[in-house]
Length: 311
Image 1: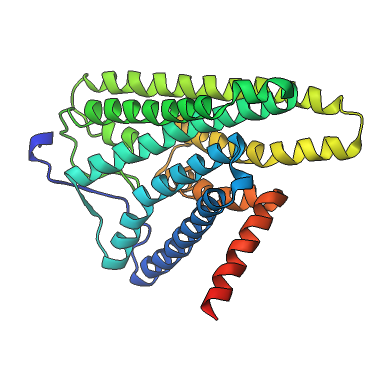
Image 2 (image 1 turned 60 degrees about the horizontal axis):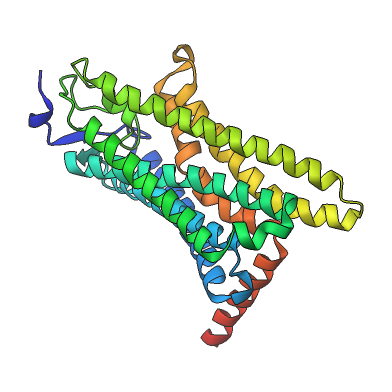
């Protein structure tokens, strides 16, 4: 029996036991991580450099790319290092840092996706009020609120989780430090305090999701009333990437947190956590750049200018 004061490290779940598979996981994670870094960095650079993209929609997209970089950099490098060096260990404070930064980025992303739905709602349903409701000051305030709320939730969750007495060993059945798996190591009823925080967070996420759904119901009603086919296509093209990202992020996140205990198992937990923590940050840049002509043109110019400078 041990308590949290005597725990100096946690043991994460290994992806594989054989050395060959560990190295395969390392190269797979490295490829995904580099793709996520490149994709999100290109979006950030393109939006920052092209004045035509200095609009509320792209401002929030830039913030979203930053959260994606933060969340994938919190989990994947440590998993890669463990696979490469054939270890499962993460230090106590390293685990606390993972929990803090992952909750910080995930919460900020929930908020930003909600704000982006509001941006599309105002642009399509209230276009005459767009400049008033989404001026530069209002956009900065909303982005600051998203980051501030993420910081607050990360602070509360980390403090609540890592002040719990732990006496069920130090092995986490997950490839990164995830709150539900740390709570399983607790040996007192005080873990209910953190469970309460998790429930509140899930309810707030559901509230964000419902707000997005209601916004899109209004958006689609407005788009279907547009007489020209070209106008409808243009309106849909600005909404569909955001809708795809929302669907991917919320569906994987909700399934990870709300799936029935009867179907829970270490391999399934591992796959689900990979889907909601690693896949969205890597795929989001691709989703946003595929159907967005303005962004594609800017990225093309950016890549061509870099290539021309090399020659």
